[in-house]
Length: 70
Image (cartoon, rainbow, N blue to C red; front, side, top):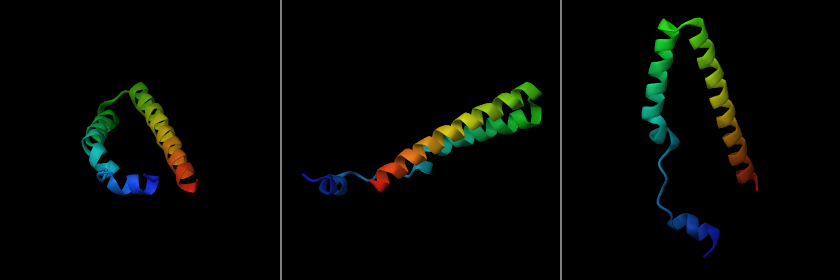
């Protein structure tokens, strides 16, 4: 079966935002708490971790873009 046929017969995948909605809500709550009550060190740590997440998501975005271009 060709790859196009396989894709047509796969069940639809849920949108990424549906999978991440509750996780993002918890993350946003935690970051809001750190913003309001966290120490300088906790704020700096949160910034560092967010930068790592952003970097990881950008890497995935580039990998997906590469697949689309093939």
